[in-house]
Image (cartoon, rainbow, N blue to C red):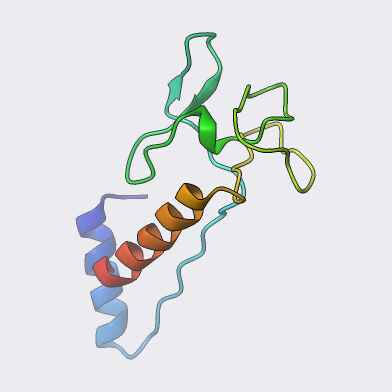
Length: 102
């Protein structure tokens, strides 16, 4: 709750007082920023700017074009297909950016 600069400031303040900061992220599903041509929320923005190829194919709620899910679907947000190389690569880059930025 805030912007990137405010987050950087609070992390610096914690570090100033010897408090370590831990990031907590849910990486198995993600809320989309945009709808596809069928009105389905499965187009993402931001640093992980994916389309429906990053969404598992077997959840009819989100019309993904990825591979089948390896677990249960979460109908509140599209399950991400972690079996794809580009997804794993992008997440690793995002985690490094998160660590290096904050």
